[in-house]
Image (tube, rainbow, N blue to C red; front, side):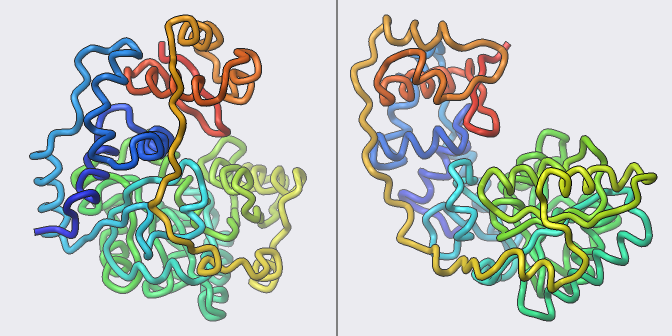
Length: 363
């Protein structure tokens, strides 16, 4: 037994199919009108992109996943569901499917992300804990990634019933292991979210994807200690790219863990010293006001893509990421034809999508 059937089941199967990412998922639904028809079209589209043996996700495997999710006491959120986080749904790269345990209604409140270094100083952890407690006391919900250091301090400060933990592994996997009790408390009283199926291990490539969920579902992101090349800075930049408020706590220039925050402030992030600063910065963004009827996708024109047009698009691609807008401009082709060519290459496993609407050829 599960909470998925019919079109909802097909949508899960669609996003679990090889090389179908969030952008391709939206394009396929817009073009074909339903996940069922999109699944039927996948082999032909992939063949046009250069792959002749495209395997859509096995329906039996998806049924087994659904049963496992249900047995774990978890449920699915499909993009378009009423409880799907409203701010997250605004982003083009939002995950089409989320798995959760806990209270999905928490996403209707104002969310503030608090992230930072795993090897954070004691002073920074204390600050993050106090800031999260202050925000939770004043009605906000604190979102973070359940990592060591600042993330853990933020979750603990907010309290398990006022926090959302987004993890980069399966809903049944505990990482880091020492946070098992905290993760269970949040699942029981707050909200535990992932886009990965049960059993997924916490691999390095999963964490940037997790970071985008944290950044995009929140009205603003507060960074408390971060190295110059850290996941916390990536989260902040992802937030800024989607028009969310970016905030940072200043630190000593002699401490490498403060370099990232000081850099963000130098680049225009709001300097944060207390909860008042955070609430003033994020203003009155109300996730509920953004909620609309979702799940309906306007038809996307496909156009008649010939070998000449396909070759023209392919010639503009390379191993270095290039903006899709630039490819549109240089090709001189209608947007529908360019998007179709990119979609075919992506389904064939030859195209990779990057942050900021950029694409590259896979080596």
